Amino acid sequence: MDIYLPIAEISENVFVLLALGGGVGFLSGLFGVGGGFLTTPLLIFIGIPPAVAVATGANQTLAASVSGTIAHFRRGNVDFKMGGILVAGGIVGSVFGVWLFGLLRALGQLELAISFAYVVLLGSLGPLMIIESWRAMRRQGATGLPQRKLHQHTWLHGLPLKMRFPKSRLYVSALLPLGLGFVVGILSAIMGVGGGFIMVPAMIYLIGMPTLVVIGTSLFQIIFVTANVTFLQATQNQTVDVLLALILLAGAVIGAEFGTRFSAKLRGEQLRALLGVIILAVGLKIFVDLFLPPLDLYSLAFAP
Amino acid sequence: MMRRLRHTALGLFALLALALSAGPARAQALVADLSDHFIAITTGFIGTDVLLFGAIEGEGDVVVVLRGPSGRELVRRKSRVAGIFVNDKDMAFANVPTFYSVSSNRPLGEILSPNVRMRHEIGFDTLRFTPEQTADAADLPLADTFRQALIRNKQRADLYVEDPGKVVFLGARLFRTRVYFPSNLPTGSYTADVYLVRGGAVISAQSTPLVVSKVGFGAEVYDFAYNWPMAYGALAVLLALLAGWLAALLFRRT
Image 1 (cartoon, rainbow over the protein chains, first blue to last red):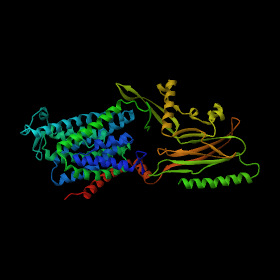
Image 2: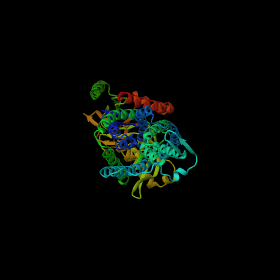
Image 3: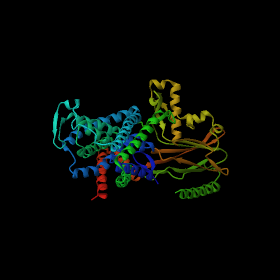
Image 4: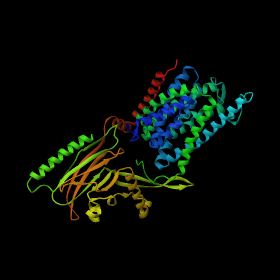
C-alpha cells in the first residue's frame, strides 16, 4: 500500500515506513537510545530527500522523547538548572544550525555535509562502543572494579562563570553546559537527531554529572531543542513532513515496546557491542557511498 | 478506475465514428480528446495513465505533445575531489517544461522536417529553454552538456518521454495513445497538442487543456505548510508532543 507523502512529494510504501520506524523503535527500546541517528540515514537510503529526512527526523525524535522525559520527571531525575543552561545553548545552536542548513542547501552541499557529519559521528561512536563493551566483558572475568577518581580536574574546570548545581552536586563553569548544548543544537538541526548519544557521554565524562540525572536531563534538553528545530525547519525550509513523522512514530511506539521486553533477556555489555556494530555498519555504508560514482554526475537540484 | 476509463473511451470512440460517418463531407480534419481533463494527486496517488483518442479525415500521421507548466530548473554537476563526489558546478535554465511527452505513429524524423519540428517544438532537441546568463552559460559546449543532462534526468524521472509508435491507428481514421503520468508529477496546467501531418506539413492542430492538482488531505497539508509555515511548525511540534504523550499512556508500565 503506497502513500503519497505531501512534503517529501513522493510515494512510499506504508509498511516499509512502519517497519523502519518499528525497527529503530525496537533498537531504541532495547538499548535505551533515541534512535534518531539511525532513522535519518535509513530514510535517506529508501529515497526520502535528505532535507526532508533530517527535518522530519527531528520531529519524530521530539515525539519519541516525550514519554522518556515524563518517566524521568516523575522519578525526579532531571537537573533543571543544568537542563535550562543546556537548553539555552541548544536553542542558539539550533538557530545557527537551521540557518547553516538553509545555506548549505542553497550552495548544493547539504547532502555532502549530512553524509560527512554521519560518517564522523557514527564512525567514531560505533568503534568506541564496541571497545568499551569488550573491555567491560573482559573486566567481569577479572577481579576488582575499575579505578576511577571521583573528580578528575582538567582545564575545563578552570573556565570562568562558575555555578553551583545542587542537584548534580557540582560546581562548574556554566560555559560547559552552554557549549555542549550549542554543539548538540547544531547537530540536531543538520542531522535530525536528538543528540543524546553525544550529550550523555559528554555530561558524564566532561562535566562530571552523576549518571542518575544524566538521562533525564539530556531528554529534557532534547525535547526543547528538537521542538525548536522542528519549528524552524518548518518555517524556514518547509521540510517537515508531519504525515511521515506520525507513521514512523506509530511503528516506533510498537517497536520500542517489544525492544524493552526483549532487553530484559540480554546482557548489557553484549547489547552495547551489538549496537556499536549496527552504528558502525550504517556509518561505513555512508562512507563507502561517498566514493561510489553516482548513477549520473549531473542532477536536478531543488530550485527555489 | 482503468475499467471506467476504458468504458468512457469506447463510448466516445463509437460516438466519434458515428459522427464522422454520418456527417457531411466537410467534417473537421482532426478531432481529439482526453479521457480525463483533471488528474488528482491524492494521498494514494501512484501515477496514472490518460487516454488520448481521436479521428482524422483522410490520410496523415498523428503527433501528440503533452506539456506541463514551465519553470526554472537548476542542474548540478558532481566532480571527484580527493576521491569523493562533490557538487562543483551548476547552471540554471529558465522556461523549462516540467513535463514533456511526445508520441507519434511513426518516428518523428520520417514525418516532419527539422524546421517544422523546430517551429512547433516537437522533440527534446527543439525545446527552447536557455541557460540563465552567466560566465559558464557563454561556454556553449558546456551549456549544451548541462542541457543534455537536464533532459536525461527528466527522462529518468519519467517526466520527459519520446515515444514513436505509441500512437496507434484503428483502421484508417481512429487513433489513440496512452500517456503515463508518474507519481512525482508536477502540478499545474498542462496542454495536450495533437498535430495532423501530411506531406511533411502540419495541416491541422488541436489543443486540449489538462489540469494536475493535489487534492484531499495531502494537498491541505502541503498548502498549510507553505502558506502558514509558522502555524504549521507550531502544529508539528504540538502533534509530536501529543502523539508522544499518547504513546506513553498507551504503554504505561505500572
